[in-house]
Length: 308
Ligand code: TXA
Ligand code: MG
Image (cartoon, rainbow, N blue to C red; front, side, top):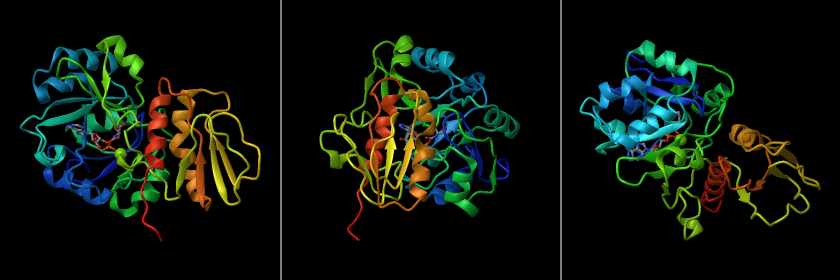
C-alpha cells in the first residue's frame, strides 16, 4: 500500500502515525488532504533503523549523530538538512527535514518492508486530539485512510520531542515524550524555544492544538477543583476530586508521570465522548515528561472558539 502511494496508519511508541511514501510527492499530498492539514506544517520522516539515516541525508552534525546514536529507536525527532530525494511538499518547502526512528516493532517492520522512508504526522485531523489507539484513528479519519494497523494503545501516549541540534546550542522545538533532562545528559544544556514551553507571553498567542471538541479549562497549579459544575467533566492527575462532576478521569492514581502521559489523550478522547459541556483539567508536576503533558493541556485550553 505504501509503495503504491496509499495511506497507512500505524502505531509508534508515541502516537499513531498517518504514513505515506516520503519519496512520493503525490502520496505526501494525500496526507495533507486526509488530515485537512495546512500545507505550511511539515511532516516527520520515519526510518526503520538508525543506519538508514546517513544513506538518506548524508553526513550530520556531531550532536545530531550523538543524539541519534543514544536515543534511536525512540521518541526523539531530529532536524537535518532535507536531501534532494525528499520532495519539498514533505517539509512544506523548508530546506530542513524532521526525521526519527520509532521504537515500535510494527512501525519498524512496516517501514523496512516498504523499503522507503515514511512521512507520517499524527493520524488525526489537524488541531484535534492525537490518536493513541487504532479506534481513535478510525473515528477521526475514517475512509480517508487505506489501512489502519492496530497495535493496541501506544506506550508513551504523547508525541516525540523535536530537537534542532544542527547548531552550537541544541534547541527543543517541541516538548515531548523524551524529557529535556534526558536530552541534556547527552547534549549538554539545551534551550527550549519559547512557545514549546507552553508559557508564552500572552495566552492568546498559543497555537491551538491537541484540542478536544469540548472546551477545556486548565486550572492553575494552586487552584482547587471546587465543587463540580453540573454537566462538567474533570481530568485529575492523581486524586479524584470531591463533588458532583458528570465524569471524572484520573491520569495516574499512583502519581506516575509516565503513566499520566500515556493516558492523557485517551482520557481526553473519553471525556470528549460523554457529552459534557466543559472539561476542567488539573496541571501535572512540571518535571520530566510532565512538562510535555502540561504543554499539551495548555494548548488544548488555548483553543480559540468563535461565539456560537
Ligand atoms: O511522535 C511523533 O512525532 C508522531 C509520530 C507519528 O511519529 N508524529 C507527529 O507528527 O507528532 P506531527 O505532524 O503531528 O508533528 C510534526 C511536527 C510539525 O507540526 C512541525 O512542528 C515539526 O514536526 N516539524 C516537521 N518538520 C520540521 C522542520 N523541518 N523544522 C521544524 N519543525 C518541523
Ligand atoms: Mg500532530
